[in-house]
Image (cartoon, rainbow, N blue to C red; front, side, top):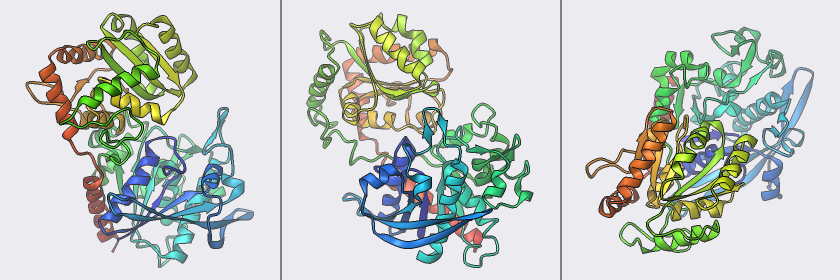
Length: 488
């Protein structure tokens, strides 16, 4: 099959979260299985710095607006290859400087860019127009609200196009909390018919909702774990789209994200102090010493448990729970090492907690990829008390590094972590979003760590698990083939 990916992020060129990793890795796995895959990415300022001399593929694509046209170039980003999978994927950049040559991808600290609807509407239409010249795919695979309008345009602006009307579109929700809400005039800006501005289609609370439009018009909907597919059909996690998602439940599939073991593997990781595997674990002790040195935490004995956190600092990630259990948690024999950035409140909170418990806690505000690898390798326990987590990757990295996860049973965390019990399981879970439940899960982990044989067995079970992209790619192909048959 020929599959076109449309997304606002793709690692390593443009990344703010897990979306970029999926759009980078999944196409490689699909290509390794014999499929032709192309990725279209906006030519942001950050991308232009990384690939400044990208050759021009199409000199000018015309994207119409109500009283003016914008002109877009399509650039050749080259073929990205993966030595392990053998996959080769074509990358294209959508170049429109007045739209994408900006400080950030979506906005500044003061707020989102005022013209994001036009920016990503232009991007979606440019992808469609480019494909008409380069080769119409068998399926479009679009990601999150920024690319969801492509599905809407296929079934409205391009409805009578004989080349495109039989091409299906699959939409993946990476986080249903981000939807792309814009004022009603957006319908005119993007030349969409007003009869689509209804509660059954694009309208929500007198706004145009990009993600909702994609959910209505996509041929199939996927999300990044089975549990999250269930959760977003509930009022608690659906972010006011749960009714629509329940209506389309027959077209909704949860497919757990894979991980890139080329980057996250303690046997080959270039960022850690020593390599190790499930059969040769000596190197993990060296990684532990190196991690404590990196955080300048001294006097930690071998019996003391090292707890690690690598996270965006946000309410979603459960830092309010960590704040509430801190006084009791710090009475345990442990060291807590935290890396991340995000909401100013939680950045300041983490700094304050570290200042309050200088003998047991260290915090580094910011993102440091090398230090993230060191935390995965050097910690004994990894904490992810998320309020919700569509998939989560760090708990999967932790398993590979023999670092036992303690997680809330939500989304992909619930799908990947099995509670330790009678010689089974790979981690510890808590269900209620309450401080006492979180603290109890940590204490259960600490108790098992006090039984070295059980702890070693659990570490090795996790390290042997395979969360690579091969199986998820096969599941996506089944979705592509189904929607292609339906459109035929």
